[in-house]
Structures are given as C-alpha cells and as structure tokens.
Amino acid sequence: MPPSAYPDAPFSLARLFEAVTETVPDRVAVVSGPRRLTYRGLNARSTRVARHLAGTGVRPGEHVALLARNRAEWLESFLGILRAGAVPVNLNYRYVAGELHHVLSDSHAVALVAEDSLAATVVPVRDGLPRLRHVLLIEDGSPRAASLAGMDYETALAAQQPGDPAELPPTSGSDHYLLYTGGTTGYPKGVLWRQADIFRAALERRSPGAPRARDLTDVAERAARCFPQRMLLLGPLMHAAGQWNALSMLLCGKRVVLSTDSAFDADRLVALAHREGAHTLQLVGDAMARPFVMRLLAEPDRCPTLTSVRSGGTPLTHPVRALWRSWRSDLTLADSYGGSETGVCGTADAGVVPGAHPSGETARGPNFAMGGSVAVLDDRLEPLPAGSTEVGRIARTGHIPLGYYNDPVATARTFPVDPRGRRWALSGDYATRGEDGSVVLLGRGSVVVNTAGEKVYPEEVEAVIKAHPDVVDAIVLPLPDEALGQRVSAVVAVAAGARVDVEGLRAHCRGRLAGYKVPRSVRFVDQVRRTAAGKQDYRWASAVARRGTDTGEAVSGHPVW
Image (cartoon, rainbow, N blue to C red; front, side, top):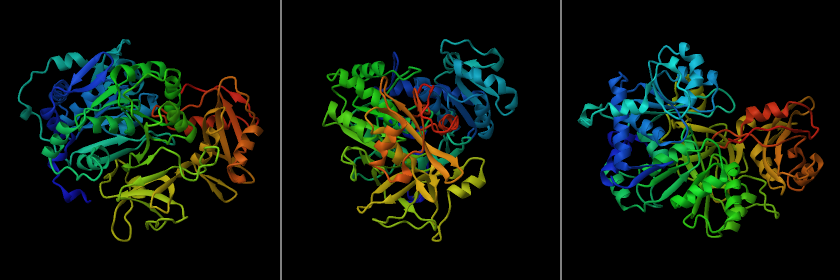
C-alpha cells in the first residue's frame, strides 16, 4: 500500500504514543530495575525531556543522539526527542571513540543524551564535533566527564514546568525517523524513514486479518481492548530488533520489561522473567536463547506465564528450538525477519523446518511467510515466482525508507527503481522462493563465500556446525585462497570439557553438506564474539580466522556481551 493511502499527520510516533497514553494512562508501560512507569508517567517524563531540548535551542528536524544501555531513560529520551520534533540517533554503546565520532559527525547531531560511563568515550573526539552544542548526562555511578560540560539529566527534567503541550511544535507522520545500522562489516549508515512509514513497516501490531489503523482513534481503541501483555526485552534498544519490539508494545498499550544488567546473565534474566510474569521473551538467536533455556531446564517450574519466544536478527537453530520444546511443548516459537532498510518483513514458525536432516539440523534456512510487499528479486529487479530455484535478493516495496542519510551513492544502490517504476529496498540477504510462496533465507550477501565458482551461504553452514552436540556457537566466513579464490572458514566455540577436533567437525559436516561447503579452515575459540544485538561479529571473526592457517588451534575468545 503506498504511503499516500492514509494522511501523514496522525501517524507521528509522538502523537501515537500520546493517544495510547490518554486511553490507558494508569497501565504500567515500562519496568526497568526498581522503576515502574505508567503510561502517564512515561509520557510526563518524555514531555519534560522535550521541553528541556526545545529550551536549549534544539529545533524541529535537528538530530539528537542517544548513548545508553537498556534503561527507562533511553525510552524517555527517545520519546522526548520525537515530542520536540527532533530526530533520535541511536548510538551503539560498544563503539570506540572513532566510531562514535563517525556517527555523531555523519548524523549532524546537535545534542547528545548519554550515560556517564559511556560519555567518557566521547571526550577524545569532542573537539572534532562542532555541531554538537548540548550534552545531557544520565548518572550511572561512574565519574562524570567534566570536560563535556554536560547538564545532569534529572536536574534538567526537574526544572521543567508542566505547561501547555501546545507550546511544543506539532509533529507529523512526515517527520523523520533515523536508524543507524550496526556496522559489523563497515562504518554504520543512517537509514532515513518517514515516521508514518516506519509505523506501517515495523511498529503496527494487529491481529491476523485485521485492517490497518486509519487514525489515532483506531490505535487508541486497540490499546484499550488489548490483553496487557508483558514482554521481557533482551535485544538492545540501540538496535532495530529491540527498539521496534519496545515501541510496538508501547503503541498498543502493553508492558515492556527491561533488563538493566550490563552483561548477559541467564540466572538473573530467568529470575526477572519469573518475577515480572513475562508472557513473551524477545531475544536474538542462539547466543541468547541457549543459555536462557538451559537455565529453565534446570528449574522447569520457573516462568509459568511464558508462552512465546520471538527471535529477530538471526534464526534459532533446530537444536536450540528442540531445547525449548523439551522445556514446554506448547510454547510458541517464532523467528522474525527484517532489517533497518526493510522493516519487519515476515515470520517463520520455529518448529521443525521442512527439509531438515534426520538428525535435526537444516541444510537451508527457515521458510519465512512474508507480506505482500516483500519479494525475492533477480538481477533485473524482477520478482522470482514461487518454486523458483534461482537465488535472489530479498526486497520490499511500498512503505520503505527515503534512503541513507548523507549518502546518495549508497541510497541509489540499495533503493533502486525497477523498469515498472516501483522503488525497492534491497536487504543484504539472499533467498529462494518455496513452492508455497514462502521465502527460504540463505544468508548475507556481503559474506557469501565464492569458492571455485560455487557460492556458499554462511548461515547454511553455521546451522549444520551448531547442530553438532558439542558445539556452542559458530561463525562462518570467507578467507582468501590462492587456488579457490576463497575458502570456507569457521570460528567455532565448543562446550566446556568437550573434545572436538577439526576432522571430527568436518566429518559431521560432510554427511550433511556438499563437499565444497565443508569448512577448510577451522579456528576454535573459548567463546564466539557477537555484537550487542546478538548478530555475527564478522570483523572479529575475520581477525581470528586470519591468525593462522587451519590447525584447529584454540584461541582466546571474547565475551558475547
């Protein structure tokens, strides 16, 4: 459906949240450590953030960066920036100074909201950011960087008087929403959306078959009628999966439970889910799902209200799905597919995947049921028909981004127009079409291994490796090879005390993969490093894989979080 199908104005994210707040003001919106904020309370504090920013000269359309871990202030600030008519810029809290400088400079950020411990990384690059004119600092128990000349967050909010909301600028669905990509294979790029489009593409929750919301009244009425579901959110708010799940919950009157821990601790997270009566668990792939379910299997009576587990960013493998099913057979397991450039495109029932090997692992990715605006395109930008064996790019049309902020060259490459005049958003993933029209995910095009003319999709090999009973995690990537051009390489973590050698792992793969897909290089590590969003950290894996030729040598890994 084209963006012009509905008026822009009602679908600004700030107006949507205010409409929900007016309908369910006393419902709990956010749980963050000891803090519990109702919709009324969250709206009041975000309005204070908006007034503060407007009072310091932040104008509608200007960009304000957010540098914080999952906490209530992240959501307060995000909503407050929107209410001020400004545009939030998500910053990865694991960035080093150079990466922070790139995003703050590239985004033209004029203000920064940051936790004290994270703001210290900005100090070395502060002088190189002439547009950055205001800093708001959130106390987190760390020393405050005096050289940033920042204002205390709570002091700033306390100074704001209730006042007339009309004093703040009007907002519209045509206002911008900016999301910087994770940058695992290069410097991050800002994906620029209209707020009305991101609402349609990623944030609007509705029952199967229900029509799209026509106006604010529809959104508010749905919030009033909805079951007040509680979601424990494990994905970081700084990335799309965590951010979109949190916002979609808030825009339909539900509750978001945040973990305020700085590291992933399965014991504490299971305790939190149990204590808060979480109905849904949002996580990112095996790296989060496996330790969580292992803790549940040790205490199977915990989390009796948990009925749904949703993974985004990377699919759950069959062995991990089997662990969840062994804990509770009637649990709903689902993988979500989407990206910063495409929004949420579809889901896959994380049950037994068609085409699975008898031992359980899958030689190809899961089958995703996609919306009508999603297709798999060939090189001519033509949609592939159902049942086609040709490999193409997953793409979306309709409600898609305006492009990359500050990068017209990348915009033209990723958002092309086909011969019929349709504009597409190309994802970085390759796929085929199932006989039933589903999309069979193969993996990222940026790390496809081209070995002796054969293309190998890393996620396909990873799924097989991780199905080995002693393997905990793995990343597959290309390495240069004089004879083959590229060879399949794997960085693998095994369970403590397990004895897995290179030849044993290859033998496991040979029975399930064509010979050219079997890893020629294997590096064992203590722990596979992933991004804060739980995705493959290809830069780290490449550095590890290049340390030597295939000896199967174990090297020191890094914590997942």
